[in-house]
Amino acid sequence: MTGASPEPVDSAAYFDLRARLLGPLRNRPLTSGQLCEVGRIVCGHPDGLSLYGIPAPRMAAHGIRLLGRTALECVKDPHPALVAAALTDVLAGLPVSGARPVIADLFCGSGNLGHQLGRLLGPRFGHRVLATELDPLVHAATRHNLTLVDSPVRLHHADYRDLLHTLAAPAVPDGRSEQDVYLVEPPWDAGYTPAGLDLTRTTPPVPRILDDVRRSRGGRPCLVVLKTSDLIARDTLAATFRDATALRTLLPRPVRRHGMNAAFHLYRV
Image (cartoon, rainbow, N blue to C red):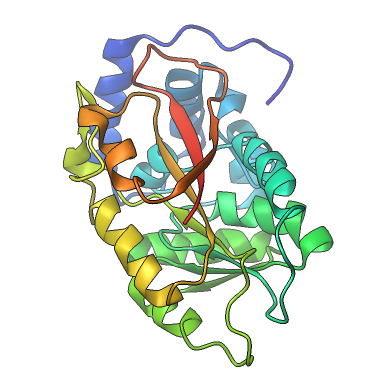
């Protein structure tokens, strides 16, 4: 983002735009003007909508395609740098195994988080990035974008459980690495409520995803990064990760009222 400070975001304008992005614009590529509108209303400045290091006013010139739902739901720059810094601290203290570590982006969306983490963590820790996106329209747009920016992400049109199954049978004798990182951000859908994000009502529910990850690991520890809003409903975060170790909670600078901003949680599972 540029040096300009974000403007306070009008809640009514935000929810009106949200309804359009998840409604009539859900599966439509946004125009340059619409991308800048998303940046202004969602992020407080047109440049605030920035992916792959490219802000909204320059996306069209670079050929970037974003659908309405993706523009709303994506992890925006510079949030991945905050996540990468936290992961770097944690990964430096974990044992290195014979298996090359992976970043598994289970609900890829725009792919920006996996893309940036691959660039920031790969050179030091050797992570390769594998991603899945089940929605065919989102997959096609994201594959196009990742190709344009020469991304390290290997994107597959598949369900997240297909990737878990693949990683459950690695071609190395000592199993998966404890440095493996799973990125979890399913569609919030009915889980996004006035009382906060209810992790039991996302699609699929986050507790189910975490159980699937655990089963695929066969008891081998790993790291999980979960994106949420900054307000959690019914204490569902603590309940979902009750048997995991909380390592970090990251709260980027807010641009909207409490409950409407992004938060990231890092756990050892």
